[in-house]
Amino acid sequence: MRKTCFTIGIIVALLVGFAAVGFAAPKWVLKVGTVTAPEHSYNLGVKYFADIVEKETGGQVKIELFPNSILGDEDDLIEGMQLGTIDMAVAATAKLSGFVPEVDLFSLPFLFRDIDHWVKVLDGPQGVRMTEIIESKSELKVLGYWGCGTRMLFNSQRPVVTPDDLRGLKIRTMPGPVDIQTWKDLGAIPTPVAWPELYSALKQKVVDGAENDPANIIQQKFFEPCPYISRTDHQIAVRLFLVAKLTWDKLPQDIQEIITRAAAEATVYQREVDALSVDEGLDVLEQKYGAKVNEVDKAAFIELTEAVRQETAVKLGLEDMYKAILETK
Image (cartoon, rainbow, N blue to C red):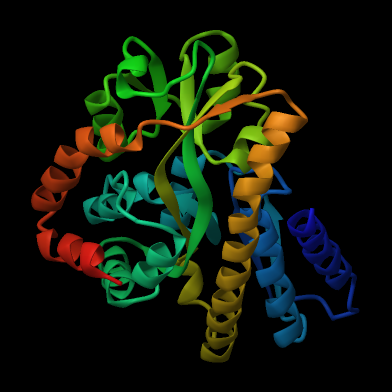
């Protein structure tokens, strides 16, 4: 209850802070796209960021948020940033793997021991190194590593306790090779489906299930076709808060510095809100919506995904980074 009140308090305070401040017409209007519902932590983080930027630039910069795939799915957002038609976005690492394969390292299942380990890796030397790789191979600049909860399996057919329970189940994945190989190794039938189409695909039995964090399961109403939720906790999600280099290079240095500082503050805020959403979300799913949440034989899942972790690190030429992540204390 205290966590819930704290979360509500943060949101109310944030919304109050977004009241009009009477600035003159902005010189720069930056469009930010996300694929999640307005109340998701992505969008709360963007709003927090926008408020800081608008205030510190005296209204010279206005951030316009387009949530819920209004500007397209994450592939569209990334393509738009590369072309300069979209200024900023929050996107999954898997969505960059087509032209920055190295980001798949952060998508590995059971890579992070817990949220503290996750933070130390992303904010430490390995996070800096990955940022340099992304920025050298794309027309994107990384403003922050954001969270998207701890991901869990949900499906319409039965409780999944061991990998054997996955046999024959069609599980929606993102198109990245790590995601596909992970669920294949676990015995499922990985089936890529675009995010905006997932709810209808679940309702129509195109796929039997998917995986995501509790907040998205609630906000997208995935619990309706899929009441079985298994606490696989297979991934503490890494998401990228990005700005197009085409946009970045048009901004004067003082504005860039304000955006950089604001992004750092928003990153801390977004992670806090996102972390609170996991346990609260599970409580809501069970108590309000009647979802059937179960623990799993996690050791069995970890064992079956060892190959994808090792093979991906070797394939990407990042064995040293993988080792450094595991050794991060």
